[in-house]
Image (cartoon, rainbow, N blue to C red; front, side, top):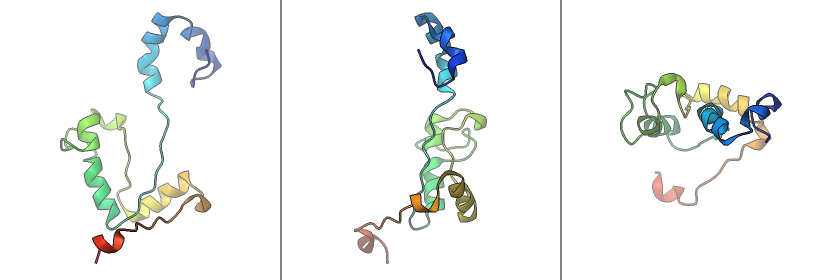
Length: 111
């Protein structure tokens, strides 16, 4: 069985019981889903959706409030400013990979 952890782990995952014991370890290495959001006041709006950095301070209904337990094990990251977003976007994407999407309903939503 091939695993995302590399060939050194393959022998350890030969039985069902060993797979169950290692399941928490496998969950600790999820795939990343990098996204770039755009829109009016998108940094503030997205940080409201994400919740406070410390999950203990995050409101119920936010991503961190519902799905995080410890700061070091956050399930989501959101840039805290447009300047940070520019730096972080450059870590994940080339310029030609970004598209400017225009919402056809935008003229009904914004002045």
